[in-house]
Image (cartoon, rainbow, N blue to C red; front, side, top):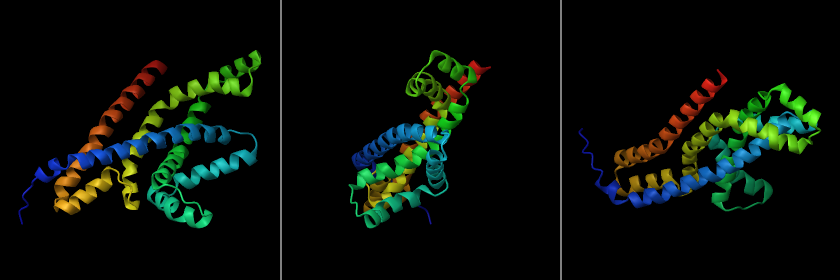
Length: 222
């Protein structure tokens, strides 16, 4: 059978896809905010001398890195209300699910970056009598951010792509709006092609930027 491609119905409803894209970008931005801040805190706990601090952080990282994001999203939506009698706005729940997942991956990126800080800088901090927080803010954090930036950006764009999974729990993101449009117009090929093109149009430039940043870091280190 031949299939007659007709994108007319998709073009007519681009505003719906645009609304979904806004939701996807909001999810991505808020999840990255959580992932960047919580991830750094978890990375510091991973390097703590006390096992009481280190063990929970390591367990959190392993759980969220070793289970599918889809399972985590569904767990947050259906298990948290039942187990904790806690009912939160679905958008907030989606941000938490994606943000905590991202924090687990970012924590590993931060940890590797922190370990790359030259020992001489720690010795200099000790010689100057800097407090722990001052050392973190002025020495460790700036170095870790620069070293971990490519990984953090890659993880951030990955979360943008994985945000499509929240369509399963009826969050009106780009994927959800695409699914609804495909159902209404009976044009799944055209609709999902356009949806995929939108994801690609946003992800590809960020990927190129990450490659350039990595290449620049390699030249500086060389």
